[in-house]
Length: 416
Ligand SMILES: *Cc1c(COP(=O)(O)O)cnc(C)c1O
Image (cartoon, rainbow, N blue to C red):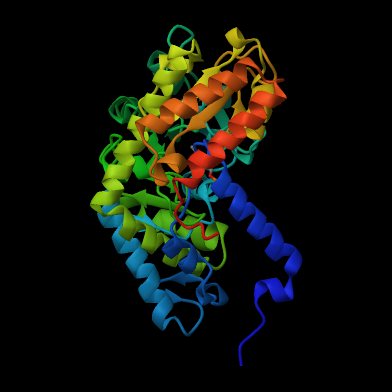
């Protein structure tokens, strides 16, 4: 007897998933935190493993029947440890933000001093920004970028750290187009007795591929999502030295979470396996090359790029000289088949809900196999639309052209 399929049981949801699948195929996806997980990763994510409760860790569970779940989680842990070269990995975090919360819970009491990069400079909400629980429950001091070159202001980092002696010093960003100098952060953390936490949510795939310097050996604790450049399922993880293992594991469970999402754990193991291949190394380096190629095209079209360019997977464009707001540009670009997000730029005079910039990234297009030639086409299409956001005919034409481009580059995990 075979059971009813999703489209038989719930045609409404099935149809929405089908439409989203088509949309993800048809569009040039330039959101730097997004990607296309492989069919193998999606299969593991949506498996019967999610039926099982497994509070605890391999060999120390609070439920029986863990014969295979223990093996799955142990595999995920050992593969991630090998991939990044770390002593310990906790792969149970529900996502990137909960991974960060667990680090706070492991080492801080409410009201303790912590330090991270300010959101308007490219930092993440969970690094102590006011509207986040991390800004509300802790005394968060925020560093930023220099006005002159929009790079991290290490003089300010050192000054604030000496003044406030934070328990945790966070580095890593969500909208910063340059390499992170982990050695410099480590030196400051050591001087003031802070634990350096590197949040590599965006760049963990680049680091695994050797396309961005690794914080291992410099930051005692590393947190990450698993679904951005790493191209795994939606999840989070914490990597650390042996001396932090017990505190981190205890903070994740029972501190912050209940049962782990075992389908996700299995898919993290699959993603780590994929990330250990030569093909993944090539992909990681191609992401950076594509970002540079896209940046070059935009610069040739008189775009203003924050820091003047990129060294990683993302680009922040300040559209002030194009006389269009980030939001209007992003909406016009979306209609033209180019999906990105509007974003504040450092020292933005405009409000976050309608800022001056757009944020672009090349992980998803690189996963489709696009290269320098396609980045040139995409960059020129972007420039045309940004310069004429109200030209419906141009937008129509561009959308058609880009749909044809997308047809030539089937995306991983997408079955039409
Ligand atoms: C995306 C991101 C996170 C949060 O991840 P979620 O899975 O969205 O909770 C944390 N830190 C940084 C730097 C990020 O870019």
